[in-house]
Amino acid sequence: MGLRKKGTKNPPVLSQEFILQNHADLVSCVGMFFVLGLMFEGTAEVSIVFLTLQHSVVVPAEELATGSKTLYHYGVKDLATVFFYMLVVIIIHATIQEYVLDKISRRMQFTKAKQNKFNESGQFSVFYIVSCIWGTIILMSENCLSDPTLLWRTHSHTMMTFQMKFFYISQLAYWFHGFPELYFQRIRKQDIPSQLIYIGLHLFHITGAYLLYLNHLGLLLLVLHYFVELISHLCDVFYFSDEKYQKGVSLWTIVFVLGRLTTLVVSLVTVGLHLVVSHSRDGDTDSISGNVNVLAAEIAVLSSSCTIQAYITWTLLTVWLQRWLEDSNLQASSLRKKKPMIKGRSSRKGTENGVETANRVDAPPKRKEKTS
Picture 1 (spheres, helix red, strand yellow):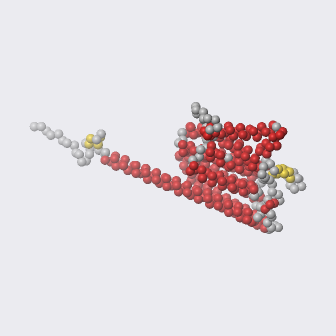
Picture 2: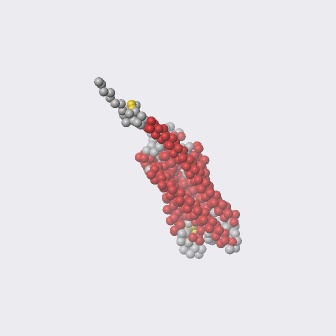
Picture 3: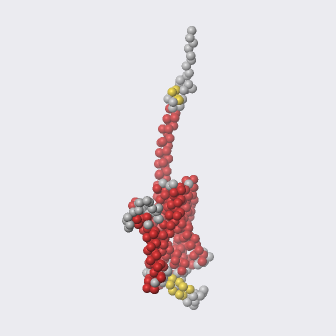
C-alpha cells in the first residue's frame, strides 16, 4: 500500500521494507530531478522531453479550415513522456491510498481479504471516473458524438490534437504503473498472472489504437469499456461497505452485457464502413503514411476487439460459476449445522435442567396416596 503508516521500528535504509513504506517519497524525488532540470540551460532540453508532449507539427491555415493549428504524431520520445507521467501516477495512487482508502478501511474494520479488494476497487473507480469524464469531453469537443462519421472517415493527415495525445499518454502511463504496483502492494504470487494479463490486454489495445491512428474509435471504445468497469467496481465498493447493496451486482450484469454488445456493434460498424469508404476511393494507401486503410490491419483490429470481448465474457462466466459454487456450499453447510440444533432442541423438549417436567405426555403427574 502506498504511504503506509510507519511503525515505531524504522527499517534499515534501502531495505525492502524501507522501499515499500517510502516508495512514494522515493518516486517523488526522482520526479523532482526532471522538474529541477528545467532551471538549468544545459539540462532544460532533456527535461522538456520528459515533461511535455513531443513530435508537434504546426499545420498551416491553408490545410485547415479553422486556421493554423499545432498537431501531434507519435515517436520515440513519447516513451520518455510516458515514463515521467508514470511516476506521477504512482504518487497519485499512493496519495489516494493513504488519505482516502486507508481511512475508510480503518473505520469499516475490514478483514484483510476484503481490504485488498476494497483498495483495488477504490483505485480503479477513481481512475475510471476521471477517464470516462475526460474521454467524453474530448469526444464532444472533437464533434465525434454529433458527427459519428469521424470514426470511419479517411483523414487527409495523420495527426492528433493536444488533448487526444495527452489522453493516450496518460492512459499508457497509468497501465504501465501497474507493473511496479504489483511489487509495492505485495500482490500474492498466485494473483500476479491474472493481474499481468489484465494490464497487458489494456496496454495492447491502447497502444494499437495509438500507433494505428485509430484515435477516435479507440477513445469511444475505451469510454464504453471504462463505464462498464466503473459500474462493476462501484458495486464492489458499496457491497464491501454494506452487504445489503448486493442487488447492485445484478445491475452490473445488465450493464456488462449491454456494454459488450455495444462495443462489438461499434467495432463491426466502424471497421466495415471504413473499408467501404477506403475502397470506394483510390484503393488502400500505404501503411507507412499512417492512414490505416490496409485490409489486414483492419481485420486484425476487428479480430482483436472480438477476442478481448470473448475473453472478458468468459472470465465473467468463470467468476459467476465460482461464486455460485461457493454460495451453494455455504448454504449446504449452514443447513447441516441447523439440523443437529433442531434435533437437540426436540430431544430436550419437556425437560428443565435435565429433569423431566410434569407436562410431558409419557410422564403423567403422580397422585399422592392417602394415608389411612
